[in-house]
Every structure is written in structure tokens, then in C-alpha cells.
Image (cartoon, rainbow, N blue to C red):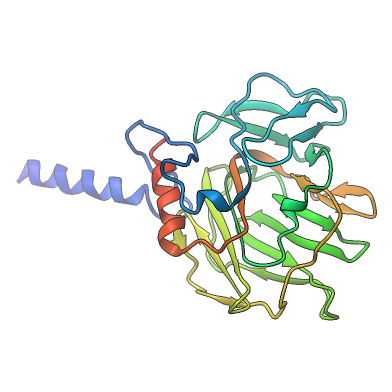
Length: 266
């Protein structure tokens, strides 16, 4: 009886680690995105694993694994630093003036059709609504997509159809100061948006977004902040890892496979 009791407790604690907002505990054996396992690998338009070391100086270059390289902006205070991530290293943003921007406008990031964005985030509880990634400028009404995480996930889009900016958010939440895997999938054929937290579909299922296509903007892509009339705000505060963008709508199974292949890392 005693051993049966301990076995039940062990199984309960193990399963609890996989509930919403909690960091599951797995054996070691991490996997970064690669052509050997990543779904729809040929459709990845941008991917950065943040596997660097030390501090990123202001205006220094940061190499993307796939896509156009980025320029680090940290207000010259040396606050953009690499730290332990989910898969090897991650990048720490201070929530004040840190962000990354593409060296130049990359046509590959002008995604007007299907879209998938995934990332691991560990957001500071002392922060507020912030930006993960953006392509566009809000003041100019020239926005293709903007993902904003903070306990939930929101996708803001525009298509210049006269409908204006539209924002749709997830129903499920995740804990701050803990690692969470978030994903957003935009399907043009059904004018729908799906959210995923820690590999699982949001309980809201598919949400409607009447934009027939996404805005084709000439603005640079920005990571960790929003752009409005040339000024940056809504700075990301916390750790970011394994950020990737596809120009296709990944399936539930594909999102889950990414989470499963990387969640064993911590």
C-alpha cells in the first residue's frame, strides 16, 4: 500500500507539471528547429535561436538562422544579454528600450496570406502588455502583423480594406516568470486565427478575422517592440527563445510536434 501511494503521488506531480502555465520537467535532449524534424521547414521565412553569449552592444549585428539579420538596439546601456533558454541560450530584453530590427525591409517577411509565428517566452511579471514581433507602423496604418503576449496572446492585423486594425486574443492564459510556448496561426482561406499555448489549441478554438489578406508593408520587421511613427514602445520584458515565422498555416499536430521536440529541454 505504501509503495502504491508513493507511485500515485509521483504520477500526479509529473502530470501537474504539464498543466497550463507551468513548466513541465522532462529528460535532457533538446532539439532546435532543423530540416530533420521541423514541419513545413521550406516555408520558414524567419528563424532565430538566440544561441549567442555575452552582451549585445547597441547597433551590433545579430545573425538570424533563416532570414535577414537583425540590428540590436539597447539604448547603449548593454542590457540586451544572452541567458539560459529553453533550447541552449535565449535573449533577455529589459522592457525599457531593448529591441531588434531587421537591417533592411525583407520582402520575404511581407506575408499577406497564411501565417504562423511561434516562440518560447518567459515574461517578467513586472512588465505589461508588450510586443513579441511586428511588421509595420501603427501611426501610418501600415501594419501586416503584430503579436503581443502577456498572460494571453493577441494578434493584430491590417489589410487596408477599410476595416482598420483588428485584434484577436487567446482565451487561455499562461504564467508569468515561467517559460511558455506560444503560437499564432492565421488562415486566409477561412479568415480565422488559432492560438496555442504549450502545444495545445486555445479553448476558444478558431476565431474569426475578416481581413481577406494581410497588409504588404515596406516597414522593417521589429522584434521586442512596436513601431509607431518612427518611435518604439511596448518593449518586451523577459526572455525570448526559438522565434520562427512561416508563410503557411501549421496544423495542430505540427505545432504540438514543435512543442514536444523542444519542451524536453527544461
